[in-house]
Length: 110
Image (cartoon, rainbow, N blue to C red; front, top):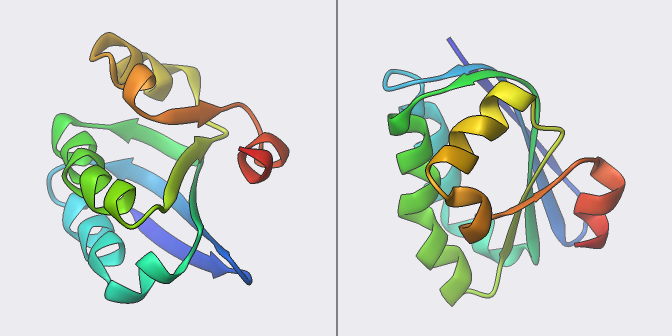
């Protein structure tokens, strides 16, 4: 099971993903990303430090919301990604589509 913790600041929302992002837990993330007020933020940071696994269903959630964020001019930034999770993004070429940086400091600056 995965837990999503939202940490809002003035213009940035950080979502801490904790656990495995698979078909069953993708619904939790999808619900969080689909909230209308998420588009009020300038930036949505995805903290992957505790994300131990991501499936194609999990990736699909991010891909399905990408256009909506771009249309609203909301920047989506992933950070603290474990190597095995990053490899999944890389294999599918999503590292070219999405902003992935090593640390929180770089995510805030992105």
